[in-house]
Image (cartoon, rainbow, N blue to C red; front, side, top):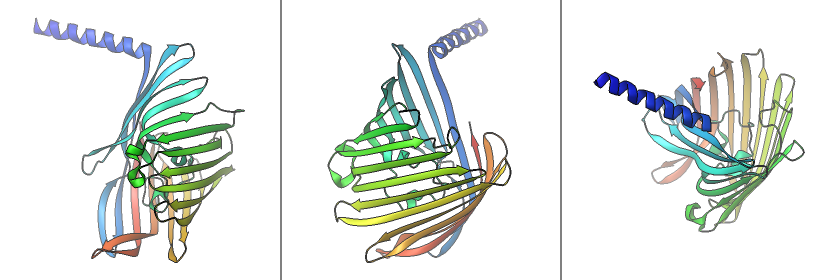
Length: 315
């Protein structure tokens, strides 16, 4: 009798799941990116096994009729070393011929505008270590236009002042993006974006990325201003990759930030990717970059170094 009850419950659950799946497209996805690293930070050497923005998410859409869809994403960073979870993009919205409107926690348009120009994203050479504006804000409303002339997309993010750091003002982030950030549908990508009063900074960013045969070249220029002190800083990035074969690619990236009356900060990364399959790759990288560390309550600049061997799998 117990076996029969369990079978009936299982059949009922399967039928319910099947009905929901038919009515609503739900996708479970994620990425595990883990490296074995040797590093020298603040003059001290160490080794670690590090999770680099590994993540788990659920996203879906539901047809509401009249060319309108409900869309949502719930995504968490999974820290494999500590077992902790950290909120990433988490939003709900509507999508139709007008584009899409979303509310919740999400990347600002300035952050989105970088496309794929950062070849060491989520690793020690990530542009967030030297540039401002790589923000994912918790209380936002965003609009993304449909493709204009099949090439351009416009986006706008509103950041509520309750989640805007010490600014205590509403913030706005906007971007105009052209081409394909993945460089597949078109051989180029370009974007112009700005932040106004977002997390204590104003910023203007221009990004370009182009594919030339087996090579990809990228560049980013940004002017960022700290609102509280009105100090300005310029930031530059150039990146390049070359596919030796369909499986092997070499890449490099250089970053520089300059500010009046302060030493320039630099970062240089080199690496290689080896594609093991459509969703899996092995990789190696070396990064050396200027970082600020607190030593006896005083901020001191060091040239830190990292060498890592990693494995990434997407699902």
